[in-house]
Length: 157
Figure 1 (cartoon, rainbow, N blue to C red):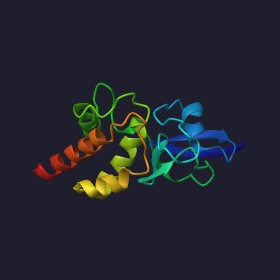
Figure 2 (figure 1 turned 135 degrees about the vertical axis):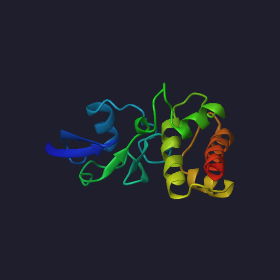
Figure 3 (figure 1 turned 120 degrees about the vertical axis):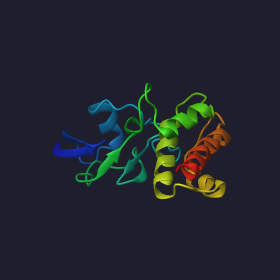
Figure 4 (figure 1 turned 90 degrees about the vertical axis):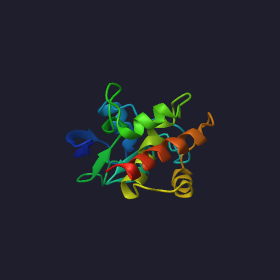
């Protein structure tokens, strides 16, 4: 076990972890942040996507070693059930979730895109989101939700 401090959602967390422990396990088992899900464990589905220094990563493949000093954000940072953030509101309005298992990862990947490019076109959204899978088939609604936020940003004063 190694002592490390992970900065998650703007707060430092001192933890004793195995250096090769996947970030997903630290988030879920040690910090109680259950938004990111274990899907495939191979970085092929995206259910575990979180942001590290504003870049989407598969937390099931990302070891905790090397994450000290980096900003880690999970879906819990975007809003709450009572006060959802803009992207969460758009997903609700577009009814983008069916079972909901993939949605946290989808939201985080989409958040990274919108922070980098507030006005992506549909082709850019599709390309950026391609590595996250939805078994329920709500991809079109997910693309629509992201587009709604991009259009809102475009029309904001």
